[in-house]
Length: 311
Image 1 (spheres, rainbow, N blue to C red):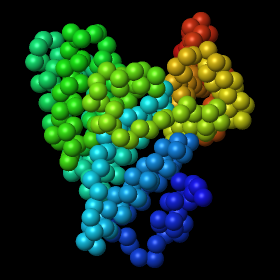
Image 2 (cartoon, rainbow, N blue to C red):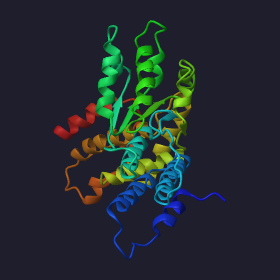
Image 3 (cartoon, helix red, strand yellow):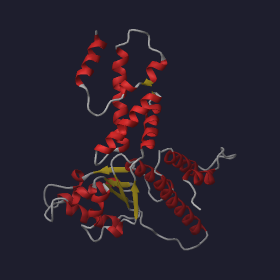
Image 4 (cartoon, helix red, strand yellow):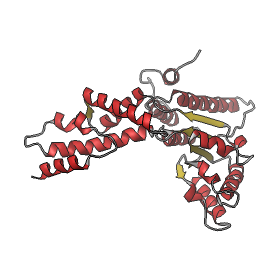
């Protein structure tokens, strides 16, 4: 029987506050799972993370009971379009692994091709080793990792891949490497080096958010900033999201929603500045349909609003 992530969390800690104070490390783990559970959607991702947590917890119990323990590699492959929560989940995993004793520090170093690839022979290996040194005790998160394979055999990106394969083996006891990028490109990237696929046993697919999930994310973003999307505003945002998902090949999901919300907050500010009455708390909080615009800014209307606000 499948158990939802929320049900798993309730089984672990219960729905009510515990009668006694939990040990600090368990209290922290509870907070980490609350953070993860607070993310919209991603049920399969959450389930896999709980699976890893359960494995680590049972391994600790087996060790205490004098039983054999299994050693596993936790290097991971994150496949998904932009704005699907890959970096956020990586940070949560880093914190969880630190609390579980897998990593000594639990920090995340986020890099891309330019941070790893040098300009001359030997430079790439040194840059890669330096970044690995910074990431020790935590997670080295390489976004758009497939770009390392671009440029052919003579490109220094291949040197970075070879160096990564070696350090992953040498530093496996206190370093986790996560490669992230678009699904198709990442599949092709895995074929560029015969040693890569076996070194990333954990593969997580980050699905695009549904329109309903994106509306939930938008409302959550607004609420966190003490703003409110009216019912009519949410309807308009839904139409904008539908249009964008249809027209864009690589739709940026929550990133797109965040950009729209931040832009609407600026537009709301311009609209409110044009009012010549005392603003209420509701005025300051509500984002109206006219504040929500697509990525294309109507410069003429924007200038008219600014001029009205200044006059």
